[in-house]
Length: 158
Ligand code: ZN
Image (cartoon, rainbow, N blue to C red; front, side, top):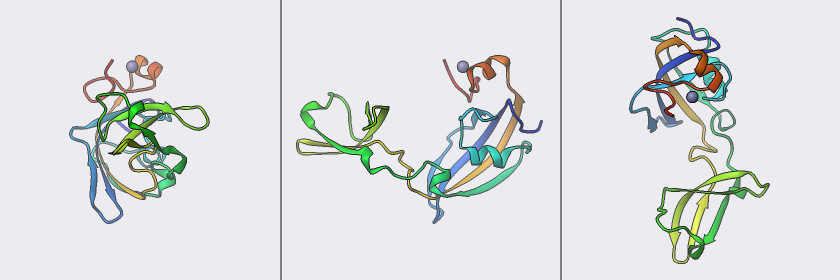
């Protein structure tokens, strides 16, 4: 089956930096609903459109086409006294950005009485190489199309 709108694509992926250092690899295949549902990067969907299982590609993407540029207004500090207990470095906190949107912040470090937070995606501002290998392509169910994401073993769990 060919990758087109409303197919569920199962793939292996690796994310590398421009020096070829491995940043992230899928421990098991990932499945996503193809067709502009925002489940993966638009450049990845464009590269996979019309392809079949077995297809492999390496995509070099600029930050704008990957996880975006860094936004330094999302880097902030809060007093440790305002910090909910049990959250550790590497954990996430929910907050609001300056324009009032809900935003999750990564805890970068805790130094004395101050907690350093960063709301940027960990890969924001980086040019990245995505190594993709298509494992399987199936038609999406009506329910998957209605939900806008893939279900099943490697998809979304409710
Ligand atoms: Zn669902």
